[in-house]
Length: 334
Image 1 (cartoon, rainbow, N blue to C red):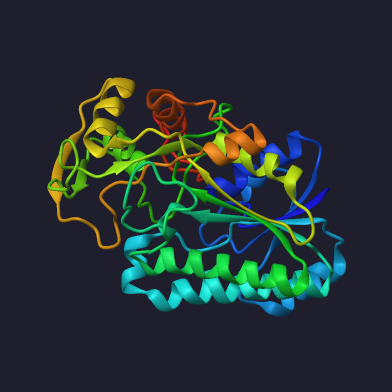
Image 2: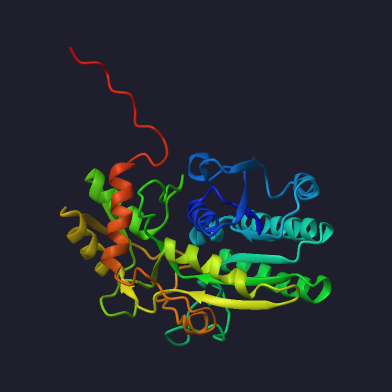
């Protein structure tokens, strides 16, 4: 297959790109590099462009006969989305519509969509299966759910087949240590904890009075390389007019305090912490049931242990403290 990866220079997209290439597919990356890095794409063709530029997308599809689109491009910060819902709906929904329209014009019938557990909102029960009611608590979650509904409409009207992968908490880094998480504005738990370990700074625990076993939020962490495998596995069930929705998680929840303790053990460093108010749009607990994808595609997380996930992330962060940027030049010594 020849696959277009929108947002393929970002954290998840760049790891999926590696998996796509390793399984013998051809790839092109479309990314505006607002939160991605050209260095993460290696020698793959990188088309720099904006998902809101419908004309640029039209020209790209006219130029290149893609078989499938893997769509990662979008804004991802739930808390920020509460303050800037306009940006999230514009990029995540309008941008997605631009992409789908370009696909339909070019008769491209296959999409794998990077969705999110944020579509569920505050869960009624745990673990969360795909049939759990969807009731997002942030504009980010609503933008993902809205695009899922749009995908279903395009399936019925235009025969677009899709797989929607609802990620829980992506974490970790490629075993090579060559790519990893390097958001320009970091909001994810594990990289923030490891940054505190690396710099000696203080990590803020957002909320300590949730109805959980230690009062801090519970999350289900899934290694980004396991996510990448799931995208490639999804190609097996993609057919024009087909639809599949899968959760991607480990099935095990860890509290924020537990993550901090694992990070202390992995890094052999003390991590200073302070408590802040809960962030808007953050549910108290999210834990996946991934039974559907396990049953239908045989997918299981290779990195089931949280310590292994944190260790791979630590390997990336300690060797790339500035992400993909080169460290500041050292003054010559005499």
